[in-house]
Amino acid sequence: MGAAGLGLRLHDILYGSDMHRVFHTWWTHAGAEYVPFHNGRPNKMLTLYYDPLIDYHHRVGLGGSLSMTFQLVPQTRDEARLLFEATAEKMGWTGPDPVREITRDFTSLAHTPQGTLLGLGLAREFGNDSVYAKLKDHAEAHYEPTWNSATGEFTWGFGLNEPHPRGQFNAAMMTAEAGSAGAWWRVFNEPNLRKFSQPTVHGVDFPNICLSQAWYDNDRRCLIVSTDAGVPGVSGQSTSFRVSNLDVQHCVVTIDGQQSDDWRIVNGELEITTTVGAHTFLITH
Image 1 (cartoon, helix red, strand yellow):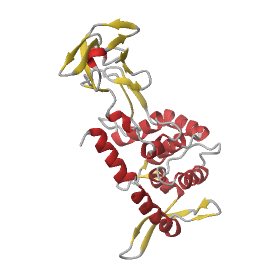
Image 2 (cartoon, one colour):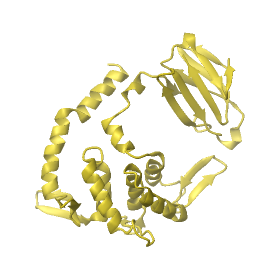
Image 3 (cartoon, rainbow, N blue to C red):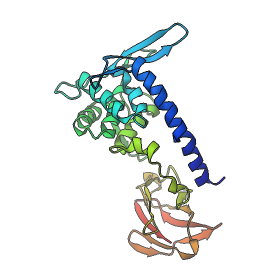
Image 4 (cartoon, one colour):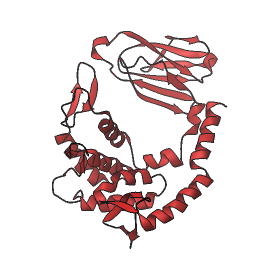
């Protein structure tokens, strides 16, 4: 089965009508037993985990529901929004008081930024600009945004004093920064399956250089690729990348506004030669 067919089959399995029906049957039960709503507002205490063997509900306040809220967005967006809005109000994110961290590490019991990071992502998802701005200001002031000039990397340290930036927290921050209103919902409900048959960039000389854009304009049959400045130590050095799923016999390559012949056909793919640095490529076919 080809990549496109596999993508379509996977979508049917995960998000087809049967799975959709199973989820909503479960959610009807969960909404009554674990995450009840009254008059359009969630309870102040919710069940994060239920153990049927001992009939025990591990209950948390609204602040502890943010992870669950994030996971509910693709299936029950309206209820997830209500959960987020109630949590934002409860935690003071809608008022003038300073932001306080609401989640703890279970081993050290120290406060962690996880709850605030989830809040950032959810504020972005629901287009709540005021809450997003407040939490982002808090992050800028307390989470150690750091630009490493030697490696060309931007990371957040989060005050952890670790030799390598914490990947999970940086990934959560990236989700908030790269997302837009409704983006998390669209990933599951309106997936871009055409990408499996459209032109695809690969063979990038990472980490010496990274892509800041790779987008295909289907109407113009044009792939737009942008590279970043790259690692300072190798700036200006020769590099290359490849593009597959192209009509390589009828390609036109433009680099930084000028038509270029710095490309060749390798195994039926386009290989473009350039230098480590910020460039924009237009590949039409």
